[in-house]
Length: 140
Length: 120
Image (cartoon, rainbow over all chains, first blue to last red; front, side, top):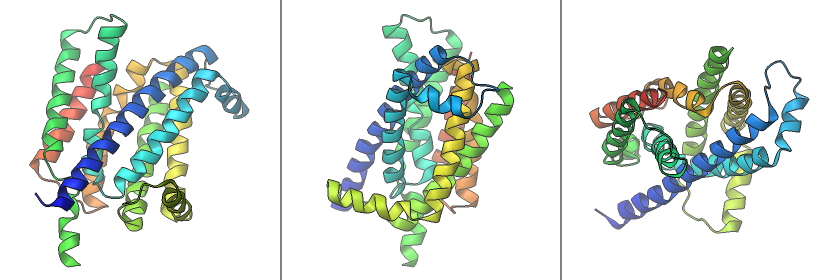
């Protein structure tokens, strides 16, 4: 593996971690906040602006902004078909977080889901992050 | 209502992410992570029509997601978007011309299956 490949892999891992953690924290906070705000369906657009002033929603929005920025940076060198599946590991973190911190029951079906996601992420993470663009590079 | 919001979320997310991928690819690989350089990158990226379109798509997706969370749990809202992994991988192949080998197809299918199973 060349030095350039190693650097690319390293920064892909760092940014994937940021994308996943920011997404998990952002969504948990947003979900918690929206439950306090109540149903938005049928409410005027201004109600969304009001909702953002709920502290949990605001906290969620900050993390989702970090998520969006890191996701965009990651896409500047990595394929979408790589980034998408790999960042799905966040669902596993949410499920395991619920199991260990909130002592939620994890059914057999959910364990199968966790195993399938881990297998899928492992498989995709073994491909080069920008493999899909190899042809493009060859043409240059 | 849940399912309508879900369709809006899947459609606008796919639209936003494909445009994001096109816009960022056109910008080129980001090498320099110092604050000044990142600010310049942000300014350049904000002028890209693809990125403006992507942010609009993500904004629609975000507000639809907020509306969905106000009437359904995250355990429904998250996993219900499972189908988008396969849809977007397909779009990445067709619209972005990404070379997708068997590991990526299998991985995307396993992730979609797993995310759907988590909904139970």
